[in-house]
Length: 180
Image (tube, rainbow, N blue to C red):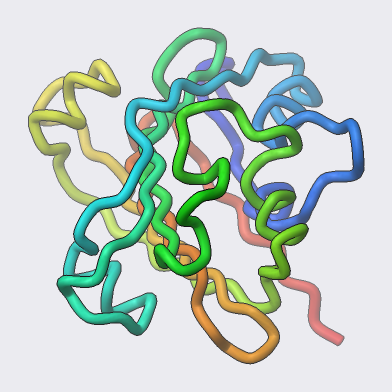
């Protein structure tokens, strides 16, 4: 594995952090001897894109709160992520703002009573859109991975959708599944 490739597992990003701990991305990168940071490019209410509305079980015209982030690894773009929450969950919280959230969004959501119990991830591959090319600093012919993650609570109510775009040549996705 080259130094430029990132091995990503999902579990650290699904678990609330203990009091005083930083966000999962920074901790995960540091554990691998790297520097993980992020920039909030946009946060606030928008009309739910059709796929997001379907996943959240809401009407297409309902508002959602989105946080668009550029995830950096050693100061280089590593991922572009849009995270969507029903407005009923995120309106008026730090999720709707551009400030860093102590412990990360998963920690805040757990404090608000929204803990993940089931996560579904779908991964596809394709070519980047123009905006993604610019943000990730890649050529139009460089494939990207598109990971869509849906998080549901104990009652199978969806409360978070993540849509990530990752330059494929910089990524390795690892799934660990414990049976029994």
